[in-house]
Length: 193
Image 1 (spheres, one colour):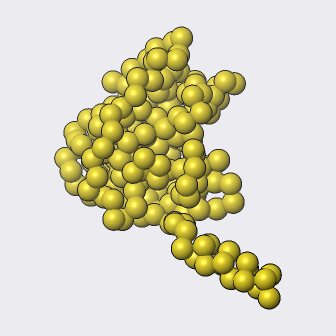
Image 2 (cartoon, rainbow, N blue to C red; image 1 turned 180 degrees about the vertical axis):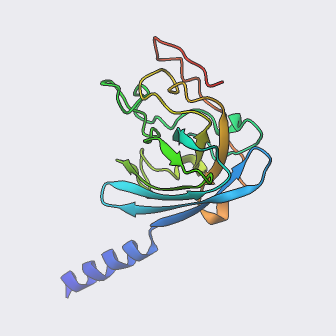
């Protein structure tokens, strides 16, 4: 009988705990126009992103998860720096990297459409240090140029051209936090133009 009581208690606690398995993100350009969506879902030891946007210049573009849930255009500097909870260096090709928010470049076709699936290893939508919903959320930012995968602190990927807030639905109006300085712990410096 005691064992059944413990099992019931554990099931009740599990049902009451806060678990989010998916988040939908609206992506906006510098003019404030909605240009597409990103669907994030929890998978084993990662978060999968299905990105569909339009109105982007043909070619490759950098894309990163940034530390704050703010997308104030036109420059989107309000999103802060790349999400980097483990204090790594920038770049998927950096032996000492990478930021949790570093993602592979995406390609816009000749019609300006990006239709891509990305995986963010070690990220989660649950609670924890690598949660994309930590501290009220984060943001997804697309840049004008390609991320070179090495340069500090942002890969020389150019200005931010699109942004979407990654946040629980009920928190979408939250506006807390200030950007960190990505050069505080880095030897090399590079600014996004």
